[in-house]
Length: 178
Image (tube, rainbow, N blue to C red; front, top):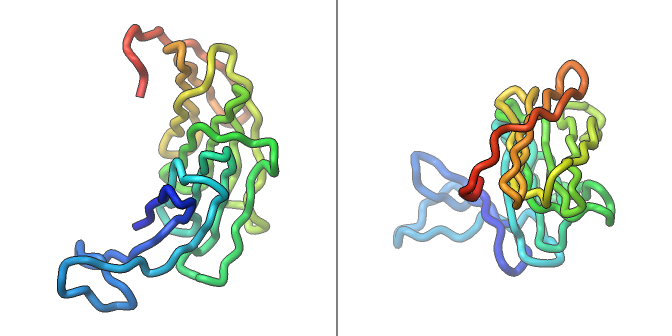
């Protein structure tokens, strides 16, 4: 279990049989201290996600940065900063198979990274949304489709395989999209 905190720290707990554990021992009072702080961002943490296989922990901060930690259970692990200083993340999504990461940027672009490359994450696509400020990104389970919603209630669908195709404009909604 991971949570991002207002102090910029991503903390993790080990869950076993539905109970939080620290160093293999359950706390008797029903509380548990974090197993360890695995990442520190310059500002408050906005979004945290694990890949389904637990290989990568991803965190986006309110400073716009996106950081990856391979094998987050290893306290000596190193963070990887995606996009250097030019990325200002507003949303991120992981495919269920853990192979792709989509990051929506404040500048209206979505960047797709492959996480299954043995050499480490590689950027696979850079997409510019044609309508409005990006609000949310969602990847299909296999990472082959990308759905993007904007603050203007526009929704776009891209087919990412075998090559980038799209977008297909879906019907606008008068209600907010989440």
